[in-house]
Length: 133
Image (cartoon, rainbow, N blue to C red; front, side, top):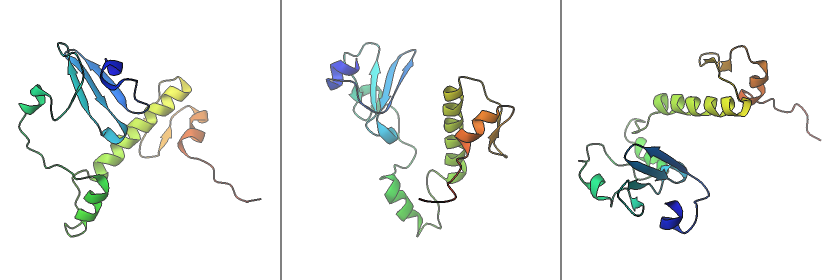
């Protein structure tokens, strides 16, 4: 279905397959597309007939750079606060460590380390060089 819509497979992004169809998003969740089981091709998420039925109840962000500059007069408040985004990033990156090691992890978020797998430390915290050439 991706090739039929885009002519090729996008170089970056994700495809999620669910019971009723597929979702595709590009880098940074840009260029989101929906394809339900009866659809021949993906459609832009805002243009899909089913998506149009969902009422908008959250404010839309004009881009992550603009969100930061909008936060300046808004007492530093962003729609996606670091307290949430930081944890989501931690979850995603710990998943990458698990994939790289091909093992299940016992992740300690407070200590920012994997319990019982010493080789994971190099993937979690890099060692900066002490001297340059």
